[in-house]
Image 1 (cartoon, helix red, strand yellow):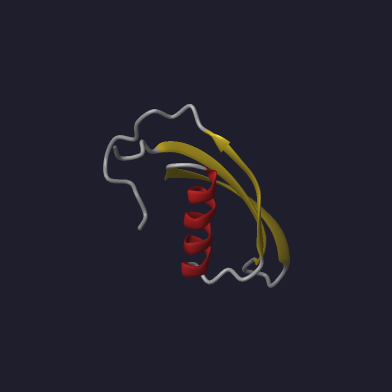
Image 2 (cartoon, rainbow, N blue to C red):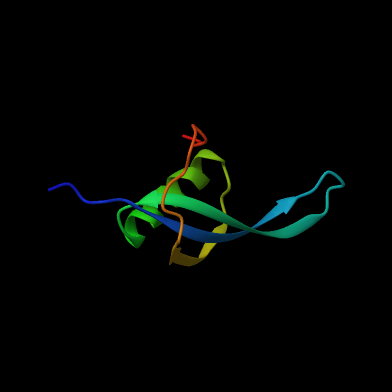
Length: 76
């Protein structure tokens, strides 16, 4: 039997330089299609590595109430 994926929200904090050169703390919420929180963490780590963001912290992982996402909006 194949595991059933669910949607989780992952809150990620990191610093980013704005267009004026000022470093600001950024907090983003990502919606992740995953099997469990460990899978969420692995997917977020890969995504952040792909975005070349070196220093970040996953501050929260929570099960989302989202049941289905319509359309082709997944960033791979």
